[in-house]
Image (cartoon, rainbow, N blue to C red; front, side, top):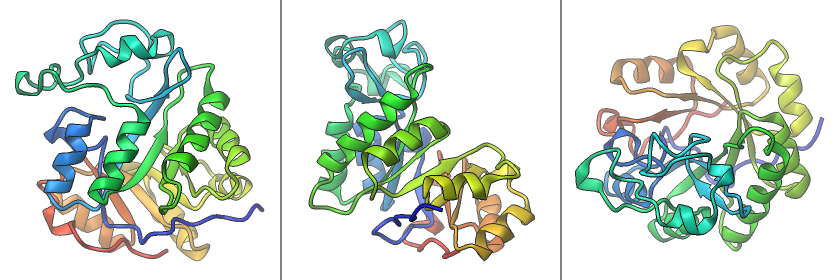
Length: 256
């Protein structure tokens, strides 16, 4: 089993999903600013590489859903991505909001005092390269500060991230944790287990607690569901409706 580098900051109870959740265009600097104004201590966002190998904040492999662009992110140059509008698809009031790079997001997180969960979201066929590039940039962009938590559904990306940055705190993402989730997590030296809230069973939660692994659940947008998960011992929640889960703002995450 590899050593498990831990986040150097206490997990909060609430993360703003994709920067600001549903209240702002996803994966944008506007979302980060909104999360900070609402008092949320931590944010989660997705990172994918451009054709030039630069990490940009975007969830989908293609541009159409969240921007005014077209085509694959992995085939788009930095210049093309920098010219996109990442706000107009959310609401006309957000028109003109740019698509940010990881560098821009890291600088704003540090300026606003936001902790981050950087999700490596590789395009198909780019898993290892994305994991390596993102890990190296995270070390550079958060130099002199506490490192963010870095997670992914791609074990190949996480393995490359671990090789590039042995001290980086990692989180393994699944929709439903597989039966051998702890073996895979230990092989990576990952610190946290992330899964869909509706696919977390008590046996997995009990095993995680027994082995000191915090469980983080996505995407929770209902206050009653949030209370239930917290009472069961879930460490932290990712939400698109941070306004509806305001009771969790400032509340610490539960220890495993």
